[in-house]
Image 1: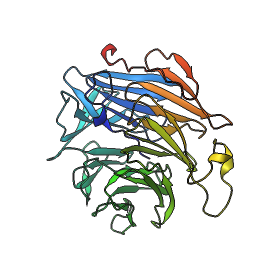
Image 2: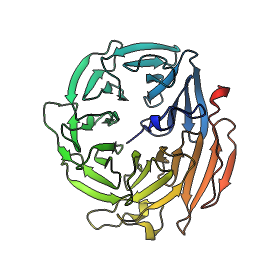
Image 3: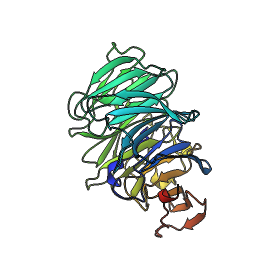
Image 4: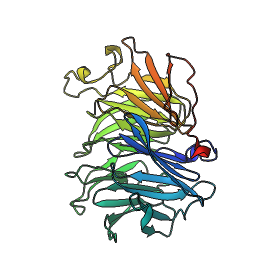
Length: 359
C-alpha cells in the first residue's frame, strides 16, 4: 500500500499540509505541518491529536497502527530537526524517545511492530524497533529520491519491497529470511514513481515516472497479473492503494483526478460481486474517475471496500460512492468543524482548509 503522498508539491503553501500518511490499516492518518502535526480518525472523520512545535515543521511522518509511537523527519520552511534524522515520538510521554541519524537525507520511512525501515538515496536500512534500535540489514537500491519502500504490516509476513539495482526494477525481500533471494521484478523501462503492496503482501502495484501504465504483480513469483492504463498523457503518480479484498485499485497523481480500476480474476471467474462499480466499469481497461480540489492527494478505500476516501493537502476530505449509473456521489467534510456538504457529479467541490493557523 502506498500510504504516503507527494509532500513537495504543496509544501510552499502555508494553508497546506507538508505530508499526509495513512496508517497500516487505513483508518487513521497523520498530517505533517509547518509547526507540528495532527492525527485524524477516518471513520468517522475526527481529530485525535494535535502537537504544536514552535521551532519547526514535520516533512515526513509515519504511524504505527493506532499506537503511541510515530516516526518523523523534519521539513518545511524551518524543519523541526535535520532532514538527515529519523525521530520516534512517544505520544504518551509527549517526547521524542529515539533518534536515528544518517549521513544523507532521509527519503522515506516505514514502520511495523518489530522493524524501522529508512530509505536513503541509494540504500535502505532496516533496524529493530526497540528502545535502542540495532541495524539489521542494508539493501542497495537504484537512485531513490522518492523514498520508495513498502513494508507488509502483517505479523506473519515480513515482506519488504524496494527499488532494485537497475532502473525500473523492484526487489522483493523476506525480512524473516533475507539471505534467500526473492523475485527481482522488471516492472518498467523507466524509473519507478510509485509502489504499493496490498494489505496481505501478496500483490504489488507499480507505476513509472511516465505514469501511463500501472502494473500489478504477484510478490511470490514475480509474475505480472494485470496491466492497467491510466491514460495516454504523462502524469506523476503519487499514490496507489488496493481495496481491502484486492479487487480494486485507486490512484492519484499530480493531476486532481482520482482513477479507480477493477482487477479482473485471471481464472475467468466473476469478481464483480465484490466491487461497488457498475458492470460496465468491470474491465482491466475501464476506469472510473472523479475530480478533487487538490493534486497529489492520498486515496484509499473504506474498510468495506465500497467507498473511496481522498485526503487532500488543502484539507478537503472526500468520501465517494458511485451510483448505479456510474456517477460519483461525494460527501465533503471540513477537518476542523466536521461540517458536511454534498456535491453532485461534475460540481466544483467546496475547498476546506486544515486550519493550520488555528492549531
